[in-house]
Image 1 (cartoon, rainbow, N blue to C red):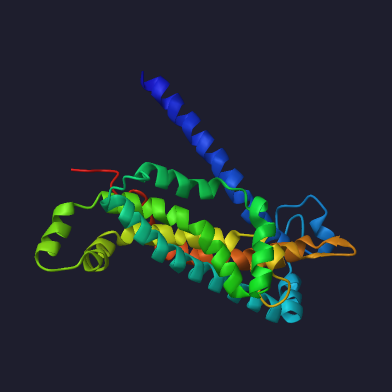
Image 2: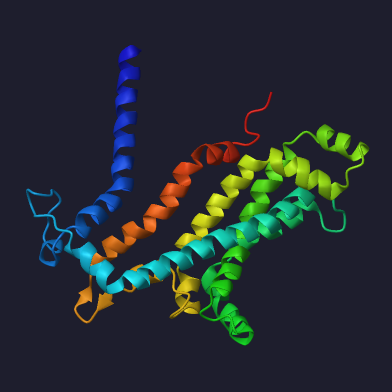
Length: 281
């Protein structure tokens, strides 16, 4: 029995190791490619100082030639991600609280929830042309505001579902006591429900931020100069000689750093939020 359990643990650790290598290899590739000379990129080489000589020329040239452009791209991505996440939480928390605390009859709560969830199933490519025509008439093409509105539209369903489950797991007796003491329903929502569901709000906000940060299709179609985010800049490293993989790697690493720092900073809130109500008693 012990021998069987030992082999089970060995197989489990092998699977975990393979999964970690599979997930971490793209980052390792980006790191070593960013310090390779262009000629070394097209040779099979993975070990620095043994198979190739590292250099920081790619970083220097990228920052010198496109530093302002990359800075604007990071700024645009940050504004789009933060503002769309805040907008998603503002609308999603109100809708989530309504679905958790009220029972609708003409259209049932379950049907409303499924309709909201269906917005996440909708392929973005199916609505990119209508969005483009609407935003063209509104003068929001190549504007940060336009991309904020688009990303918030697709982030709201996720915020609704997360906050609905969080509010549903809160004890109603606390809110009823506040209502008896004279609080309005909105005061109960803003002063009691929101603080108690803070971990879930943080988790939903971080994930909405990640969705907006990584979004490419709408950013590619809706921006061309002023509102270009990092995802479009990373994809725009092709010239007449082909794809400049060394610049792809440097831009990718620059784009990964901000969300990674943010996720590590609020990591415990993400774990609490995503497991909100999972263990009762």
